[in-house]
Length: 75
Picture 1: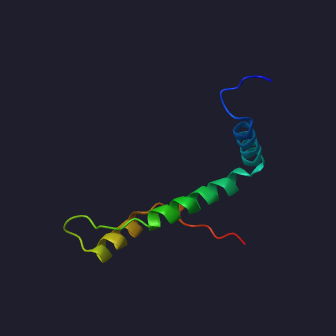
Picture 2: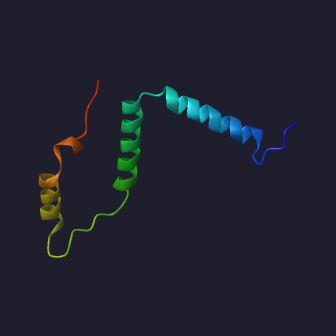
Picture 3: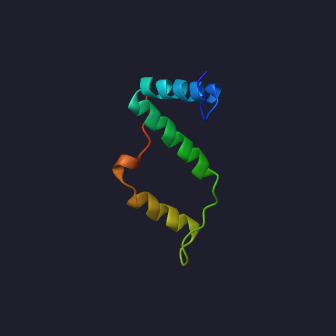
């Protein structure tokens, strides 16, 4: 056989993962990655900037948010 620097099982897994990603619609993958990011960042503790209480800082952050950052609900 051919002497490869990686296992054939790993190479097959990477190939299958690539094909699955290529077959997945871009908007679906983007929404899944956004959901993953939200799940990870949701676990981080929030500290408001110095001089602001937590409620005021959250209100200002919501007011400054871009309209494109809103969650979309698809049925």
